[in-house]
Length: 102
Image (tube, rainbow, N blue to C red; front, side, top):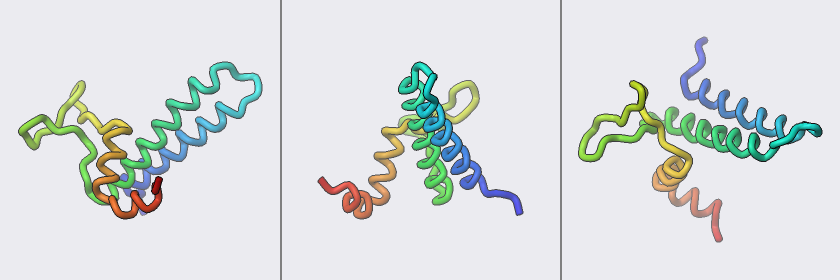
C-alpha cells in the first residue's frame, strides 16, 4: 500500500531531527549548534506540515486579498515555523493552552 503524503512528510521530519541529534552528538565535530538548530527547526516545520496535510489544511502563504498562493520559483511558499505554531494554536487552542500553561 502506498504511503500517504502526510506519512512521507512525517518521515522527513523524523530524519531531520535524527540528523540534528547525530550531528550534535559527534564528539569531534565543530559547529554543532550551527547544524543542530536549523535541522531541528526543519524537523518541527515538517512535523507541523504533516499534521496540516493529514487534516487537509493548506500550509502555504496566500496572496493578500486573493485565494491564490504566493509562489517562489514556481513552488508554493510554505509557512515558516512561527506561522505554523500560530495556525496550529488557533486550530487547537484549548489543547495547546492546556499543554503550555504558564
